[in-house]
Image 1 (cartoon, one colour):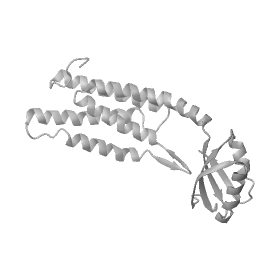
Image 2 (cartoon, rainbow, N blue to C red):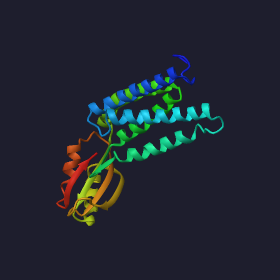
Image 3 (cartoon, rainbow, N blue to C red):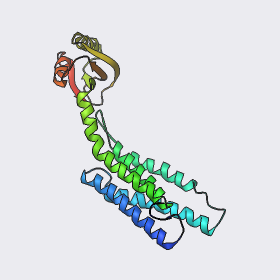
Image 4 (cartoon, rainbow, N blue to C red):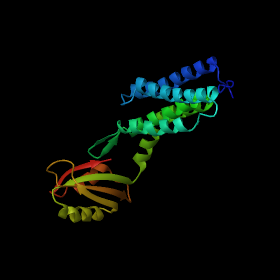
Length: 226
């Protein structure tokens, strides 16, 4: 233990666990709130504190009612229960899924609360630091990789699915490899079918070029890149 044995059951340790859980949950929540995400400071702090209370209650039962506590039961319920809360933050808009990071942050914050609640302060602090670094650094890494990737996700809305073969042939003529094709009903009324394609370009090809190739067909209603 770096900062002493916080697993011991006494009022000082209980107070320290609650304060540390509030601090860690508040740090994560403040970061998400500054980015105007669905779950902000209040939500994530409350989730972290709630998980901390669960583990404090488990240890309280173990100390005061020996043999009645199962240290894994309530923790497992928290981990699965917070997953349902996270589902409410996920929004599917057209072809994009939003809120997955917020849902994952809520779940991870609950896990941090569980660790702090049982006295594993080092683990809670370490994971909080790594989460903050990941949330700030990985977006830059993703953008860098995306700029240099030759794979491209494209959603094309067509008036008629029978015209798909023309579009595929135009892409092949431009030396663009069609990795996969999925056809489904368009979510926008009056736009026929929606086609999801994963394309691979053998040479450096801008999205504007792919857009122009796809729009050559008069049956293409709209094109959306991911």
